[in-house]
Length: 298
Ligand code: UTP
Image (cartoon, rainbow, N blue to C red; front, side, top):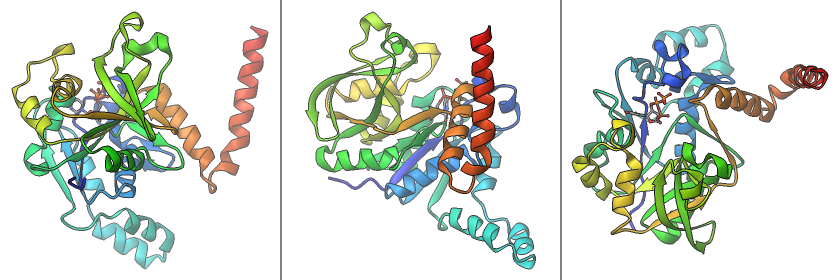
């Protein structure tokens, strides 16, 4: 079984659900507590043993490249003013030279097309895919859990969580087959099925390990739902010849591409941080308490 060394992080989407904030600022650079959303995805990939990160960027996304670069003037200024803690935080996030690549999706033709744009850099080996606006919250990152399952099963592995059964039409849904440790065999993949037609309420949560044969399928693919090249369609075709397993993620994924998910993520991550928790807990609890009282009175 080939080791998974590379991770693709697509960041070329338009982020229309978060306008006007995303008119000039990529949604992947919106901050949860004190770091951009994309930093959490990179940390999760490194925690899972990934050695090379491939960003698929697009127009108006150059700030993401700058973010992962060294800023000599800033480093000098912090060093001269003795700001050791801030300096250390910059050093911690610095990826080794040569372990980060950028390619470009010239127009946002969909997630499947963004993944396809990384084909030459990935080459002929399995790779991880992380959608950075889906923010993993839990003791262990979601990708580390997928890796464990991949070591048992090989093939393709995707992470899933359960959604409200009435909301299957918002997600890519999988069918549940034979159980394996930490997950199950995938028997079907359907993009946004109506609740009555859904094979289960397990939805694909934005973390994948895929075999390189997916690129061949994406390259020949017709546009699917919404006129975009859909990754789920390509995975369904790949599942005709290769195994797919689902890792049941026991943490929680926040959809930071939506306003409500982003706000919830900020609260959850702030309350989980020992340096911030005491500063924000009481004011947040007070605001929630007074809103609850207003709701009751209404
Ligand atoms: P989303 O569908 O959540 O991103 O894609 P979006 O299209 O930017 O969002 P909305 O719906 O308009 O608000 C998930 C991930 O895939 C990337 C996005 O940047 C995001 O990280 N993506 C999506 C691409 O890189 N290219 C695309 O064509 C579409």
